[in-house]
Length: 220
Image 1 (cartoon, rainbow, N blue to C red):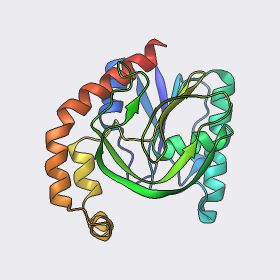
Image 2 (image 1 turned 90 degrees about the vertical axis):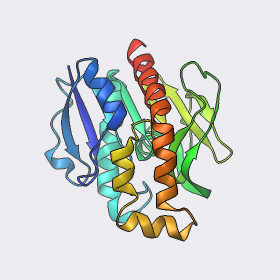
Image 3 (image 1 turned 30 degrees about the vertical axis):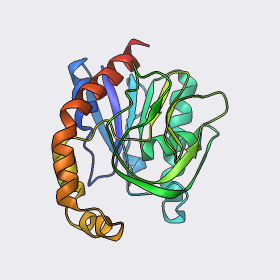
């Protein structure tokens, strides 16, 4: 089985989620958001996995890239090809399928619990968050989890999204908290070292939760 993996070229790492999909027999065709003209056809692919990004869907400088991703999402959704969106992938899917995306009233960065209607599927946490935007879910979608900021998980047919990062493992966080990530965290008063301590404490649990999420998604 093959899956399209959509992400930015400097951060195409599906972490725990990708690991679990591979355990179920999936291989990934890697697709950079920066180069949609180079993406392979949806034909022959059984799944689309959309990762997070530093982008926002409403940035004018990435409008063409966002439009290409939205077209792929609508095509896959119409064909019944399962889509799994994470963070920016969630926002891109909401945008493509009739929801909205806007700047959140406050960022969510760090390890958070969520309120889940189906905790046996979408665990209440801890989940890694790193985002500044919030969605409204598309018409007909079922919101499955939320925080005080906005929706955290939803599904529409065979399409499913999370605002949090179930894929986040220690190596991903080491990369995100380095370089420009340090300045970003400093601006909002978060210590990169403290975040890594939390990450090492929480990832054993979040890994189990991510595996459960992928298993449920594929069982549907």
